[in-house]
Length: 184
Image 1 (cartoon, helix red, strand yellow):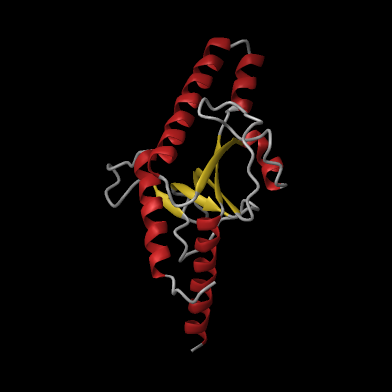
Image 2 (cartoon, rainbow, N blue to C red):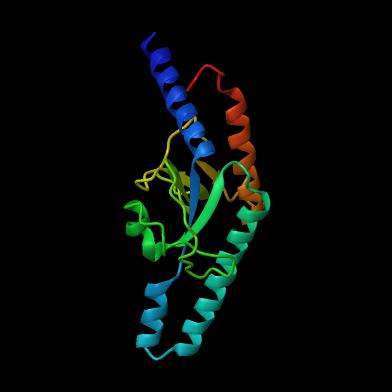
């Protein structure tokens, strides 16, 4: 009997998080590769540093495009990893990005609830995935669909960022449909 109660409690927590995300904001953390770029420049390898910048921008643009084209579960905004502490402290103005992936102080957001999403390695398994974290940057727990693996069942079938965002969006909508109407 205690296991059923524990399982029910986990489901209630996940349902509450889904509802908070639905009415709140998802902030997607993009990376700058700042440390790598600075190290290359310090070694005088400027051409390599420029290539890292170019590749990181393309990766970030693919993530941005993926979210803005298929994610509709909640409002979504973007920020760079270099602003993580400010985001954690709810300092959104001047730290969010526009469609050109530039910091844009005209983007004003003041969510009651917000969650973080990024491409990261999952705890325990070490799988590369699109993950969802709370506002303290802590991984959420099942039954909340807090990660979407890059590799599906067959290791050679690698998901793109678009595929992963689409799966996350679908799972969130499915989870929402399962929530009893009486739950706050």
